[in-house]
Image 1 (cartoon, rainbow, N blue to C red):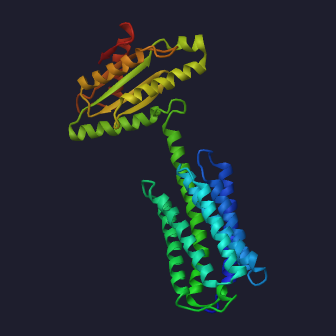
Image 2: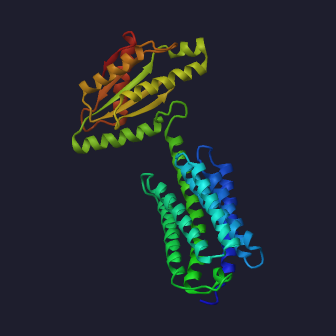
Length: 380
């Protein structure tokens, strides 16, 4: 393996880190602001890029720069990546304690670089701190629920980096290295360390791009399936859910209930108070209804001030009880202006029912509630 030159490996990996920093910065500028952490990930790779250049300059640059400053930048870069992941998953970073630790260890390493040169102490500091940073970084990703390829890749890379640090630390006490040249030695352990760490950083940057892309796809799917004003499901999405639930009821002989709801005299709210106030009434209505529904239930905006609720595993009597709670909550004048609600209810009756027939029957009940004075419930 003597043909592998560690300095060249570090330079190439540093350049790739710099390029990936530009990629993440571009994503940050073009992705929605709701996707956090891209700035920190981009800055982390930029810092690691500079750190790599300083390390590659060892022997030509002063030891203060190529060893002490590069180590400080390495830890800052790894910590910035950790902060980016925390922000990406909505975890509040604790910056001050970590920066105190990083600064303190940097001063200790500076002492064993310039005052009492000791390669093994410097290596121990570098490997232990790097392993700690990658370990807590991997832990925060593992805690984030569902497993995806991008998360698994990030955790795998971070775990591998930490493991390599442990191997390097152990090997430093088993093998001796000539002073001032040990980092670019051609021993198998040193070559594995340099190459694996350098390209693991590149793999981690790829995993961040994949995580950001996954988040973007999730947000786009949410926007496609949810009403932008009220966050209720769109009519298209409700049609798909109703169709799937009705097929399940046909297969297993289960029941479902469909509620068609219309806010009474909503047009007069818009005419008297303006559309912004009308929008607030719609948002408040969805919030009130959502609080009364169960986890498996679905609430969608059918159009304008008309909404639809799908209640799986629900009988007619149970649906009437839910509808009555909705009607009572909406009838309470907790803030002005407000609208009462008329509700039409139906349940599936036979295997020949379709989504269209269910909606037609629920609409019939709703029209009857409107005709009979509003602020009431009617069954089809």
